[in-house]
Amino acid sequence: MFFDDLARTAMWSFAHLLTGVRGIAGAALPEQPCVYFGNHVSHGDFALIWAVLPAAARARTRPVAGADYWEKDPLRRYIGRRVVRAVLIERERAKRNEDPIAQMAAVLQGGESLILFPEGTRNQSEAPLLPFKSGLYHLGRTLPGLPLVPAWIDNLHRVLPKGELIPVPLLCTVRFGAPLCVQPDESKDAFLARASTALLALRGDPP
Image (cartoon, rainbow, N blue to C red; front, side, top):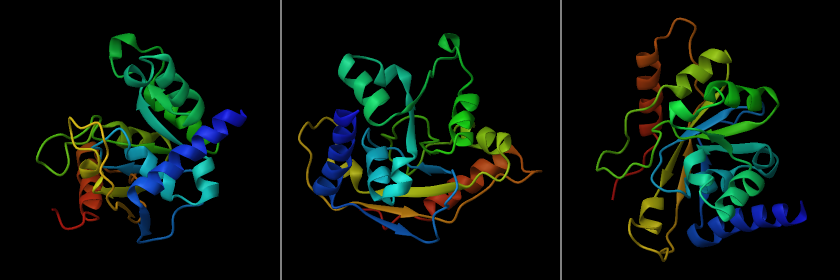
């Protein structure tokens, strides 16, 4: 337990040291369990959102991640399960033993928050965002009134460019927007369009 806590602190401290990351909130962050949803360009995205949260919120916030990546070897398994306490989702339907929405809902109902990337995979295209998967919508429908907080991450794709092994120290920013909720009569397509628009609205000037 001690080493898990030490590794956890080292991870978010390194994120601060490398990127000087700062969080900017356009509205007060929810005190109750919520979902922070962000753009996804790097395996380190969740660490930056995690790093800028207040200490109490960070202690009860867990990333949602692909089991296929974090279960590949003992080191990743240790980090995924013990250090960041990720909610590991099996992305291949044929291999699933659990419903991913039920997995996430159980964590939220247990009093913890989540970090979720609704694009579903890292964006390596020229588009600012990939189309959102439906999980964010179904989670909001399962737990009516659940706060869904957009969080735009600036510059991380330039800290560790694709194909590079050595990170480049650059200042990064996480901008939080006002929480959204899925409305009772809102369709999946309408909500996902609204959530995508809210996230893009936080985007800084592109390089």
